[in-house]
Image 1 (tube, one colour):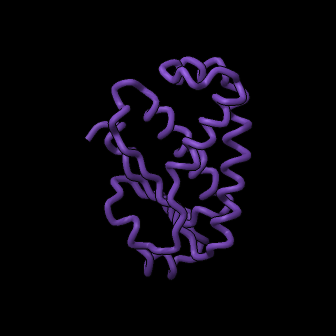
Image 2: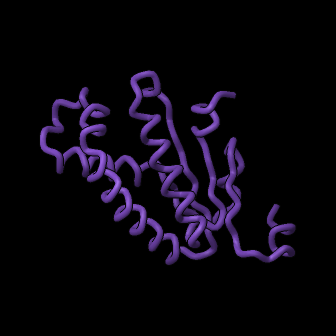
Length: 137
């Protein structure tokens, strides 16, 4: 299994926490960058964001949106190249908005642990409670 295949289906446990949200952000952006490569256009990328609270997951989605925008604004030249096959994206704002959409579209927020079942890579970022970690894993 190569790097791209490994990142096709990923799960972050504890996604709404400080560490989990950072892992989620970086992984989502890496997955979008891979998806935008010509050789990966037909691949489906899924990032499961698992946490115990729907409310916390809503908050992490807002965090992802804000941080993806900041990242996109810093790499508009690169994004312009990545989206060069999209004739409908002309202005920088359109490209930035599409990138944000793509980042958020990969993420599947859920409170259901079973969503991690098909993941080839799982990040565990839950609270530092050994008993809980043993029970979870």
